[in-house]
Amino acid sequence: MVKIAPSILSADFSKLGEEIKDVERGGADYIHVDVMDGHFVPNITIGPLIVEAARRATSLPLDVHLMIENPDLYIEDFSKAGADYITVHVEACRHLHRTIQLIKSFGVKAGVVLNPATPVSSIEHVIEDVDMVLLMSVNPGFGGQKFIPGVLPKIREVKSMADRFSTEVEIEVDGGVNAETARLCIEAGATVLVAGSAIYNQSDRAKAIAEIRGS
Ligand code: DX5
Ligand code: ZN
Image 1 (tube, helix red, strand yellow):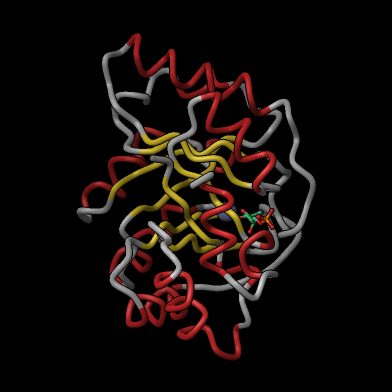
Image 2 (image 1 turned 90 degrees about the vertical axis):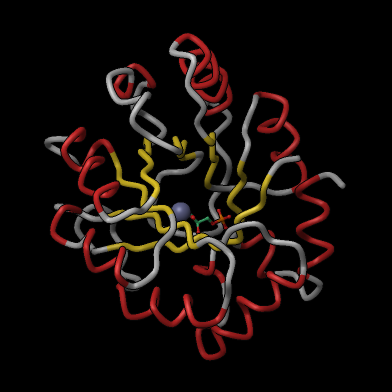
């Protein structure tokens, strides 16, 4: 069954712990944390301090999505703050293989992220080294944007690349995921779906998660 990773970007930060516990009770599999630096993307969000607070609020895996330049400088901090997965954008990494090894050196699962316009071929040489491939289905920076259907063939491409290398990766899709677009992603082979506004803008989070999962 597809895993659901609510993005806390759309949560009420004045009661973040409660917001995280609410989706945990509602059946979430991971907690997705969007880190933005105002350089790689035109928005600034949160740092290791909030990841550490999230860590205290839940036992679910924390899926930390770094939308930052020079991620190498902060990987140790996010690892120590309690990240279970750290994903980095290929567009932000000059030495992608080195960055992946750095993440793994802290005992954290490593993932790579592709913007909508970045081809899947760019990760062919690291596909055997990563635990997760995150495909953006919006241009990163903000919650609540519209799903870009061009990601769907990319989901299939990642799946066939992983099969070709006989390796297993989580295929996560992030941006504009709701009950309707989730169906298309699942059909294409996604194994983890991130959803921010489609979950946190609803009062019944358990229902929203079940609808996205299609259960
Ligand atoms: C976008 C972030 C997403 C965002 C998703 O830059 O990476 O994780 O929170 O939000 P929705 O589900 O509202 O598109
Ligand atoms: Zn994200």
